[in-house]
Length: 559
Image (cartoon, rainbow, N blue to C red):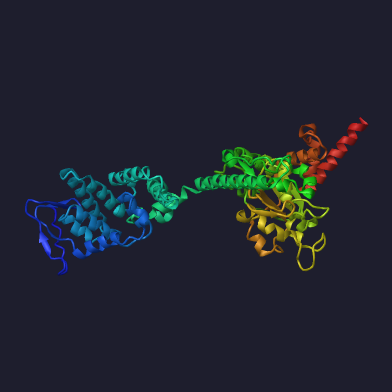
C-alpha cells in the first residue's frame, strides 16, 4: 500500500487549504482522494506577474511563451519559475499541484503538474494550458539516460521546433540566432551528451545545456554565412566605388576593372586582391600588373582535400618514421571542405627529411608548395613598396599567383636561421623574417593583410604554413605561440626499404625524369646501401643512392 504524501506547511501569508474529497492529485504516481496542499502564495504570483510587466526587452513580447521561457533559461533568469507559477494560476487558479510546484523544484512534481495541465486543457477546452505544460517541462526536465525515449522530451522538442519555424520575418537577427541555437541544441542533447563528460551527470536540468550544444553544431554554418556576407559587402562596396568614380572621371574610354565575384562563388573560391578602376590606372602599378592579372579581381579556387586515408597511406609508406608528423598535419583537414593546415613547425636533428616530408605533404594534398630558404630571407618576404625598383608583393601572394589557387602551402625551411645576422638583417632585429610572419599566421590579420605593393588589404587566410627547424630554442615566443611544434625522430635501419622508393623518386625529379625511368635497386645495390647506412640521416642515404646510380650509369655507358 502506498504512503500518503506529508502535508506541506506554509507561512501565514499562504494558509493551507484542503481539496474536496472527490478531487484527486497525483505526485510521483501517488494518488490520494484527500491531500493537504497549500494554496499558491500571493507573493509568488505577484513576483511572476511583476517580472512580466517590467520586462525591459520589448523584443520578447511577440514570441511564443515557450521561446520566452527558453531565452530566460538561457540568460540565467532566476524568476522564470515564478513567472510560470503566475501564468498557471492566472489561467487555471486553484490547482493543488501548482501550490506544490511553487515552493519546490522537484522534477517529479513539475512533470506531474504538466500532465495535470494537459488534462485540464482538454476538459476546459483551453489549448493555452497545453502550451504552458510544455513550458513547465522545458524548465524542469532533468538529464537522464533514456531522454530520447521520453514522451515529455519529444513533446517539448516538437513544440520548440514548431515555434522556431514560425519566427516573424522582422525578428532581430541576433535574437533569432540565439533562439535557433537553443532549439537545435535541445534537439541534439540525446545524441551529444555522451561526448561531453560534464553532461553525463544525471539530475541536471536539460535546458541549461541546450545553447552550449547548439553552438557546437554551428561553426561551419556560421563560417559559411560570414563568408557569404563578406562577399556581398565586398561586391556592394566595389559597385559603390565604381559608381562614384564614374561620376568624377571624364575619360570614359579607360579600361574597366573586372567585376568582383558574386556570392554564388561560394566557400570554394576566394577573392584575393581587389582594385578599382582608379587604382588599375596607376602609372607605376600598371607596368607591373600583367604578371598578376590572374589574381586581381578574380575569385581563385580553393583546392578540395583528396581522400585523407589515401594521403595518409601514401605518406606513411614513404616516411614510416614520421607517423606523428603526418597525423598531426592531416588531423586539421578532418571535416574541412578545403585544404588548410594549421601553422606547424617540424623540428628534429639535421638529415631527417623534414623538408622532403613537408613538400610531399603538399604534393599529396594537390596544392602548390612555395619554398622559402629562411637562412637567406628577411622582411622582404612581406613585400616591397611599389615606389622602389625592386617592388613586389608579399611572398605568400606570389605563391598564390604562381599556384593559380587561393590555398597553396608556404614552406619555411630552417626557420631558426631567419634570426641570424646577414641576409639584410640588422643587429637591432628590425627587418627579420620572424617579425613579418606574425601577422600572416593569425586568421584575423591574414584575412586583411596590408600588402605594400598593391597598397591594399589582401586575403592570405587560406594559406598553409609548414616550417622546418633543427631546433626551436632560439625562436621568439610570439612566433612559437602561433605555431604547433612537432618533433621528427630520425629513421632507423628498419625503415630503409620504405625510404628507398621515395629517395629514388626525388632523385628522378631532380634529373627532370619520371620516377618510372629509374629502376629500383637490385640485390647487390640494395645490399651495398644497407651495409653502409645504419639509420639516421636521410640526406646520407640520398648520397649513397646517388653514388649507386652514378655507378650504374657509368657501367651502362661502358657496356
